[in-house]
Length: 136
Image 1 (cartoon, rainbow, N blue to C red):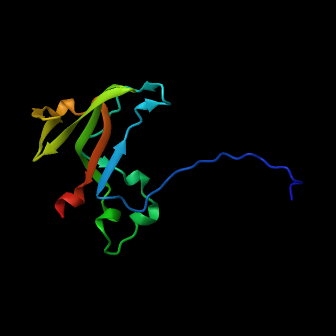
Image 2 (image 1 turned 60 degrees about the vertical axis):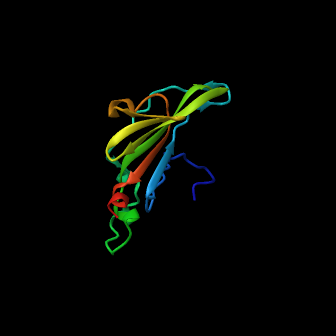
């Protein structure tokens, strides 16, 4: 109808989820190509990570009795794996929340750590649990 001519139109791409897993693991990109490590601070919430903005609208309005994976989109952090060192060598250690207190697990050493130290530029993997999973 337009003689074979096409017009560009603005496009957006987005990923929407129907439901969410009981445990959510986020991996931060810490290596650029194979040449250098990225040490940027990525701020992440320890409590109340709300993924509802990534849930499909049809899932939000699904009112039958369905699993918490559809209804609950709020997560709390329970562990962080950290990396120190360089691209060619380094060391991993973790922070884990147990009964409301945080601990640093570093090889054979376990020590309490303040919550204010958990979010750092060393974070590599972040583990979240869905709130309704804890209540089940």
